Image 1 (cartoon, rainbow, N blue to C red):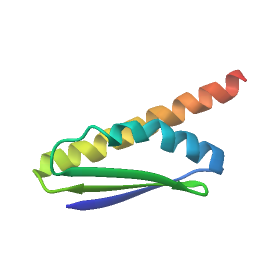
Image 2: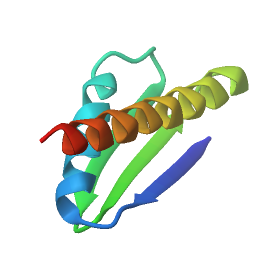
Image 3: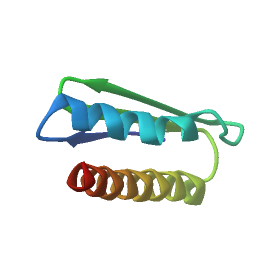
Image 4: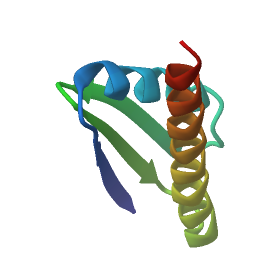
Length: 82
């Protein structure tokens, strides 16, 4: 199974912050699962590949989107406090 998730933001700096916030999750994954996140301009691309069970694949996508949403909210709050 394979998925590519593309998140687009208003500027490259915001996209970079989100990419950095979700990238540490890419290092500790179960066997058979790979996740790669990168930023290009104002977009964050994440490619997920899974050779294991379907529930693991869906949980991984759900976790990634939750982490991205949390990062977005934290960045917006930090910007307001500046």
